[in-house]
Image (cartoon, rainbow, N blue to C red):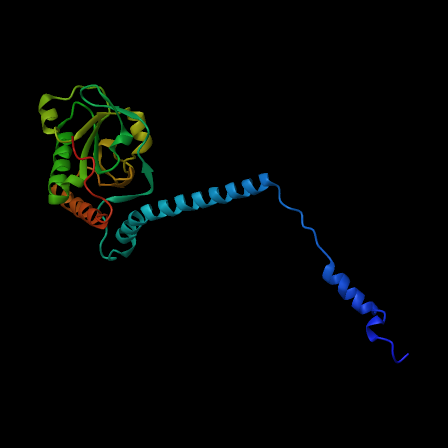
Length: 244
């Protein structure tokens, strides 16, 4: 009929479907409180580890940069007199004993460049000459000498003369088990452990060995190696422990 109100007409199926779609609800499962805490803890742990890694990399960067400068960027015409050790060998975790009988771990020597000599307590003429050149090398570094410690590792129980003790008053002298020394340091083929001077960096790594039976001209060339290394590491290495 013409008077019928169009609003009373039945709704089409399409309209009903639209209403059903609008009113429909989707229920999502809420996470358990324990799971939320576990996830938060995992995120904190991951963040903490990342921060520690970044801190480690930042602290190591100057060391890597100085070695990169010395080994890679240096002019190709400049060759080291000492033999570079690859891979470098860390200080062993062994006990030494000073001449007064007090124990001191070798690891306590970290923190300075170390120029190391090895020999028996009954130091002969060749041994004394090496200790003399070891001292001259350090003194020749001038203002940088406090960044380098002299170390004499005595490989037996033989007494050290009073004269030699007086000459070594500004050096570190320790008796160390010879087997432990030979597991750490190694001479050039055909030479003895006592024939060399060994260089250890402030991180405690043996990284260079100078030729056997060093003489005065050889000591001058070794000094140039030391000067270059100290110059390359000047941005991060400063006088630390100091000599006794």
